[in-house]
Image (cartoon, rainbow, N blue to C red; front, side):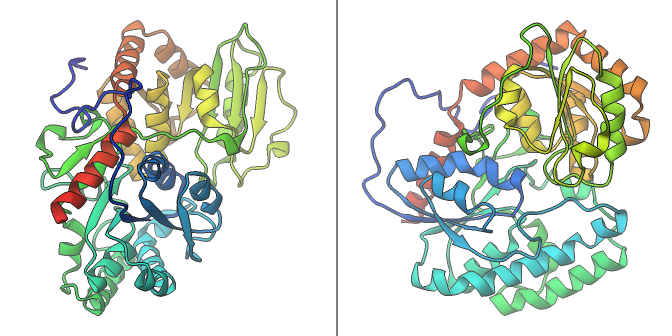
Length: 419
């Protein structure tokens, strides 16, 4: 990895606040956030929401009941709706379920518009800031003529790179994909949009905010002034509680397949065997689909929980064995923690490949996971001094920039251009 930062690494490279008071916003604007109902999509926006609220704006967020307390704690107003995905998104289990995600996203979007349109008709926003998967925001904005800003908690997309094209979840000729495209073509005219589903999916907004450092982005040098790279906009999560290592003498190893993981309890069994009774102080989070009690008696150095405050744990960790969701990847790098990435989805495979390309960790394919391969790959990563140097250098560059301030500046500047 070339350790020299690219020009415009995080958009405008705004340094961390050194204590000098910023000029407060004189005009309050109504900024509406529309998100995809998943932890990895909501969490990256909370720091930006907090910053915009601090600057005096009215911020509303369309969320399920699950995320409403987080939004309220950030100072924003939750606009609740019932999601097709339930409280929050769960990762598909099979290839067939993956192929059906387009239909679920479309149903989610039309349902969301039906539920929140009455509120926003009475509380018209000056701009809608929407997740790239929150199609409902685009439907509502087109119907009511509201400007849009797009956010990317994953790799950004332009004319030169698209995660959907480079790492597809399913072939375009899959019957469920074809049905989703056909239904989308029928829905778009209802909101005054052309009946061009592929054009809709590939369209680029006037402003895109990407919650990554530019150097982590595939084809990062091809993204022009329409895109601002903020790096991760991580907000503290006091509602998750705190965590401390059980031993001051052993290095901490965090193992997690993410909040939405399901369908692979054998992984945790292998991880316990690989690192039990070792030099590591091991914390394993299994989520809601695996019962910790079902994993049997645990070695003294292994703690298994459904959830843990990940930011707190990463502050102590020496290694993170992760599914490679972008949220977890950015939080790991922001804390200077190298990774072994065991991806489950196409997006996670893209993240894992980038981590390995940049020399920030190693990827381990699901089919190659064994007790031995987990041990060996962990040893390779922690024993590589140059890898540790690269992770440390990227952490320093990421932490030198105030990501939420960069993102909030971009929103305000866009509003100023709109008049």
